Image (cartoon, rainbow, N blue to C red; front, side, top):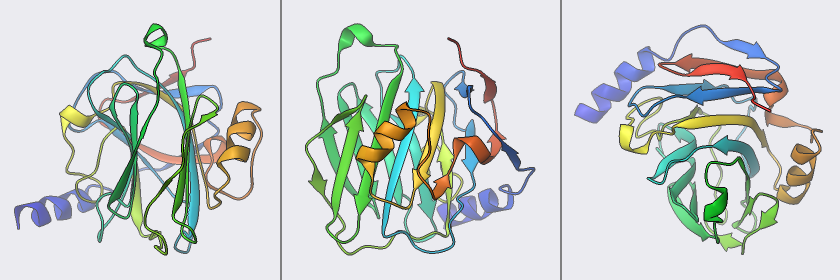
Length: 225
């Protein structure tokens, strides 16, 4: 009951001014760990997803667990979740089911920008994860599942209910940019197009026309070059 009451209070607070901006060359900075700093993104999609690809870039020196991309619905807290468990370990959750990807992380590059693309398709259940342009061994989960389009996307926190239930211990601290999402399982093409600064239509999320709300201590600043 306490969790339901909390979620209902969060829902009341989800309203607010929505900005739509071309954010090329801009980053969201999450300056410190907290249980409230986050960015809400509006999904441009009017039907359930049978497949998706999400790409983003981030810059952090965290070694503890943190959330990169959280999509929650009223039925499933972790409808889609990209989560960095620790250096060299990334997990993808779809419909509450998780697969874990491991990769050799170059400790000498800690604190440098990292680019990831994750994709999933319902027909086969196959999930792909690419890190800095390199594919990892494919995994399988939630074959035949449909991802609801009735939810909330949050950057910087993991949702335990729609738009809330955050924990400072899982919050992102650092810089995040170039967030894209397609209703296509095209990780290979997405890696190429995002690195080449081009686009794959149609986009569910487009950093060039992003609709977003900033909540708490998050700052939008130009990318340092």
